[in-house]
Length: 144
Image (cartoon, rainbow, N blue to C red; front, side, top):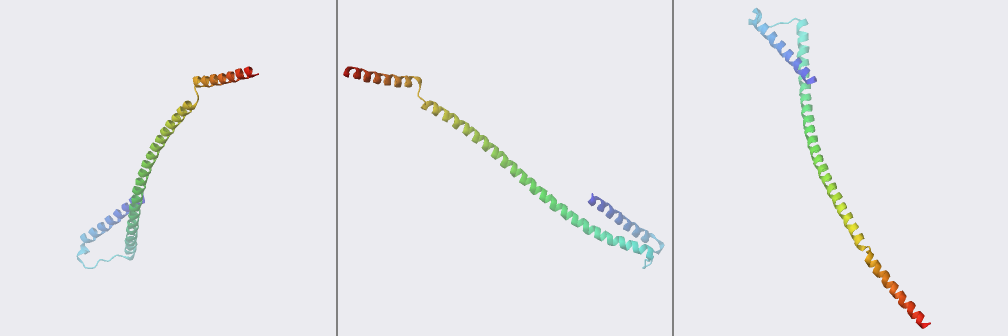
């Protein structure tokens, strides 16, 4: 906004200077080597010319500031893009780790199930123990 106002003021002053120059060149006194202004007219003109120089300096500084802000914004956009890529990679890694954890959990459950004795292996163990117990009881009955 300031930049537009400064440009507008700059243009107005340039047009005023050009207009004054044209008026003085076309006036009958233009042929004379001396152009005189009254103090009432010359004073404000000088002040406006000095202001125009300061405004041009300020405009130059604002343009430099704008350029540096644009460069900084560009760098920040690049940083954001890199961070988005990192987030995507980390999301993929998390998904992969969850899949690995699920697979490991399933494998552990299968190992636990395989390690548990089945009904028939238990039945065989109990039957063998019952047989040995029966033999020992029979031997004891015969000996006593």
